[in-house]
Image: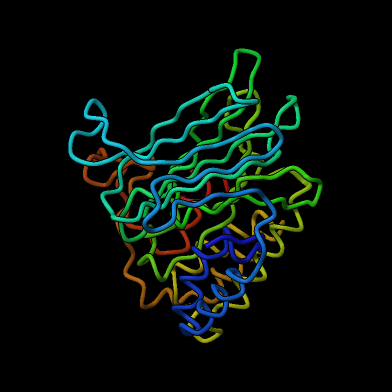
Length: 308
């Protein structure tokens, strides 16, 4: 699936949660809308039955194919991305094997880092699994030559490239995977936006920059509109992501106060957590404490950069 839609790209992970609460047709409609939207970047995908795929723009050509490389994976073909500029090979990147018959490989050419004199290449490779993962790599030109910058492995189809502000520079827009499964099941969990870019061969988190305030408000609105009003105050998975996104939209104190006011503390027996943020099984006894949901949520938000 390719889309220039804000909803269709980063939105699909959270929409799995909201659709589960509001009804599956909501997700289906969102997917249909996303599929109909045009991709603004020159892009190639590895189609079924194809031996390879290519895309070219601004003197850059990307060749995508699979082959067996025993030194990397003796059992499966691995995805290979080869980048040439004006006919000269400048970079080869090898991804992780997925083990599936039609690999989820794609490449796009877009302006991501405006500080150099070349467009960048966005590479995505699906590694398999029910909810994870798509490996995202940005190939870009630096003073030392072309480099492959590993952005990370994210939930979803790997189609996270979009221009949020309309300035002609694309960002990598995903959601914070730490919120999935932490307070509830995957399908019951919402997650706030995370916005990244690359600069001079390094990944930079630009989520909190003020120019993305509108995007954060829009994502918060989508989460709220997708949630069942009768169920939202009973769903810790939704509320955790909703409060975190409210923080990003400048409404954190109000959102958390609403959770404290509406959460049913009488039916909440609490859960044991490690106050240092570590795993409960390896936590020192003095750092273990049973906390009810609002207190667990506040601790989690503070420890993960969502302070308000």
